[in-house]
Amino acid sequence: MIYVADTSVFITGYIPDGCEEVFTVEKVLEEVKDKFSKLNYISSSVRVYSPDAKYIEETKTEAKSTGDISRISSTDLKLLSLALELKEENSEVKILTDDYSIQNVAQRMSIEYEGIQQPEIDEKFKWIERCEGCKREFEAGLYEKCPVCGSDLTDRLFEQNKISDLKEDVDS
Image (cartoon, rainbow, N blue to C red):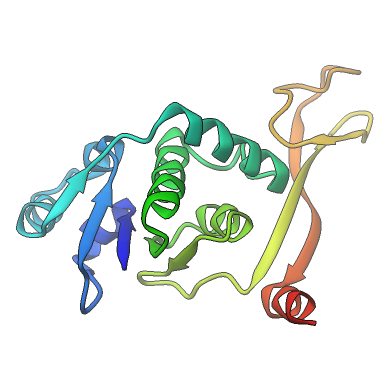
């Protein structure tokens, strides 16, 4: 199993038992600021890798489909892209993160994930944006302001499904 590590791995010092390889992206290391967390990075065998643009574009598409595109950072996007690239090359990949938006997009891309200090998500979400003025709804991440009236947009939960229900539907 190959692990792709989010910043929380280095902050907590958590590395799973039997961990073969840990990968991350440069931006994660830039987020690691305190000495203890940097020591966790230095003392572990972490490989820093930059995902191919093809996987970044594919991940953006998936994040748009869940509505998480406006909820994830560029670091999160690269981390998910790296996991997707490694999955295509090696098949067994797991993202280590407490970030629920990363987990939601990973779920959509059929990439395994594991929480560090928080439980993993047990529901899959789809987000949209709703105009505070005219109340129109738009796909998440398309606009900064309402294209109709110019008001602010807010995230709104559009769809929610239990992950166990989704797995049962696939098995049937």
